Length: 501
Image 1 (cartoon, rainbow, N blue to C red):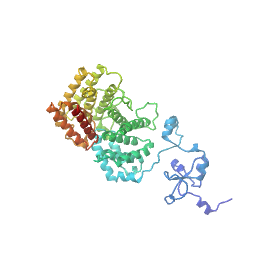
Image 2: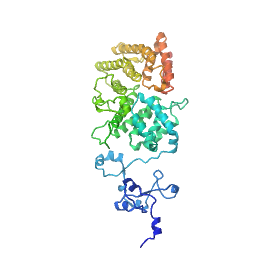
Image 3: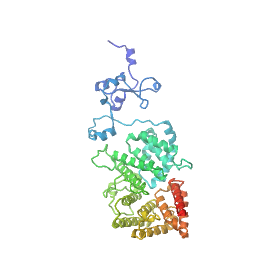
Image 4: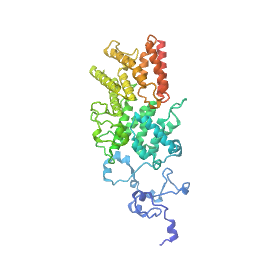
């Protein structure tokens, strides 16, 4: 039976179906199913026009594509499979290119776009990040970021929006109040991260690192510890720092490889530092190997001019030509060794303890004796060194006050105390700097130094002056990192204990 031209026109969709559009095939727009999809046994879905959004036609409101009524009769195994599922279940299929894959189709809610602001506000946020945070934690390609992700066409991509929102979070100073850093912006970023994480993108991972850094710097626990572990898992899922047998989805440029390397080192550093006050918990990232490559020169990284011949392995001797971030990575590895030995059930052998002491002292001397010291690296090494001796620095906790390690701990304490004035005050390493430029690395060592001198400040005017100076530093840094205020409260608790003894 022939169909009238009027009936035929009513049975054509306004646009090509999703399947034909994704494959760039010609679609006859037939309803309820186009001939191409019918011939190949595929599901056939057409875009729902704006006017029909409130129609009673059954559909998935999160997608915007409505299925053909005949789809219910089609076998479910003809539908596309998302890329991460294949990557974990049978990655070998991907090399043949015959499997249809889909990607996350999460839409960006209006309230998220409202939090992000307009393009001028986004550019201001990016400028703040690269001017301050990027200087001591450079794991996002600056040039690539400005060339790609500040373009309006990218602002509808959920993973890009998540990264931009995380940049706004990390550059926003914590407000005063009962909730402190657990702001509505923080809550919104955390919730949106859960919605977007299936995108399986390095941008999502970078946003996760920024959230973890925010939590660590503002003393939000156990969230910081859990977030860092989640970042490590996400990185492994993306194939970052895993066995070479894990297939790569595509060929990466040198800049992309460098960016992935820097993200992993950033996670490793956070993974160690988050446990600096409580050694014994296992790390989420494996210990770096001696043949692991360190980050490239920071200036070359910013200009996207990374060259293979400029890369150095972890086993390479430390030199003044290494990038600031590469030296911080080496300090992070040493901190991991310190925490591993302190948290071990087996007592630290003297030769291991002495080697860690010598290496940290050597790194500290090299960091101080240059024209333009890296203050954030210096404070990180100070914290690692103090962590090595913390069991012998805390009053009343030393197992043997007459042991060699106890005597060495007192020497290190006096050494750091003497350097605080010369290197931290006069050189403005810890005091006098713009709080927005500062990392949270030095807060741990300052807290432990104050605690170690707490009992002697009544007999030593010098100790009292130093403690007062560091307290003032905590109050200044609290404007940037809320955990400084937490350390102040812990110092007050220590003081009350000493007064009660």
